[in-house]
Amino acid sequence: MTFALNKPQSIQPKRRIGAGRLPLVQLLCFAMCLLLGATSAAAQGQSRIKDVADFEGVRDNMLVGYGLVVGLNGTGDDLGSAVFTRESLIGMLQRMGVNARDNDLDTDNVAAVMVTADLPPFARQGTRIDIQVSAIGDSESLLGGTLLVTPLLAADGEVYAVAQGGIAVAGFSAAGNGETVVRGVPTAGRIANGAIIERELGFELEQLRSVKLSLRNPDLTTARRVADAINKFTGETAARSLDPATVRISVPAKYNGDTVAMMTDIEQLRIRADQPARVVIDEASGIIVMGENVRISTVAIAQGNLTIRITETPQVSQPNAFSNTGDTEVVDRTDIQIDEDADNRLAVVPAGVSLQELVNGLNALGIGPRDMISILQAIKAAGALQAEIEVL
Image (cartoon, rainbow, N blue to C red):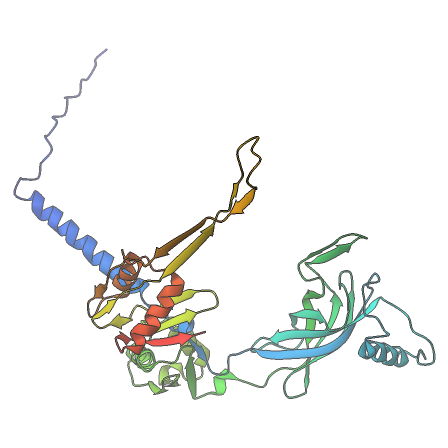
């Protein structure tokens, strides 16, 4: 028997990067990281057009209706005080062939409600939408109730949907002789898919030769950027900003007959939305919101209050034991402390500081939100705040 032995393969030493080439590789990696970081930061600062604007005509419509809820367990309206509930119940029974006007109605299982819904854009006949049901009388709870057929009308007075169904109520109330517990709002509920659309809105996108974009936050710069992004994408002058809130787009030839495809492509384009320098102040809650473009001129700020604290600690003065002279009396002891905020100093805020530097400077003075509101208003009055102040 013969055995064949394979020659062992020689192991080649690994090549090492020369000492002169290692810094070059590290430099290239560092430059690549900076480039990727800058690209990522630029992408994060941009928004899709669909997030900053809406296409004209693609909108919801409000629907409202008045109806009756039945099946309540004694938590409905009092027919003696809720006259509209009584008349609605009598009218409903008469349409059913029941004469209830001559009878003394006394039931607590019926409640009058308002029904509201949003009709989505391009909703087709026969589809279902959600509805909200809210009591308008003195009903205590709509739990377990059923909404009877209720027509829902739009602003033009036409019926666009019909609602009916069992109400889902998130809140509840429980009462005893000595205590009442209420959780949530038991007089409002929701019916999922509770309305059927009976009428469609006559609006066809494919018949449009031009569409308009409405900016949610009107701004001249943002409108111009939206138009430039669309023109760069289409390769022609198809978009033009009409005003700070509107951009008109003419349907390009390549999208002829397919306006929906054009709108789908446009809403995915990214732009950087601009915003004015604005400071929003809610004095009721002490909330301050400042935009990134807020700048101030060189100004000196000092904040201090005069605080006088008076403390009364009465003490009892009485004669020595077994003494026949003297009376026990209450002696006043008053401690007065005056704080003039002598430790606070005048702080100089240089011109052109950023939002972060402004906040850091005000915080360094130990200023709370309430005092900061007064300081910002004083800076604005001095003409050193290059921003608009909006007080809610």
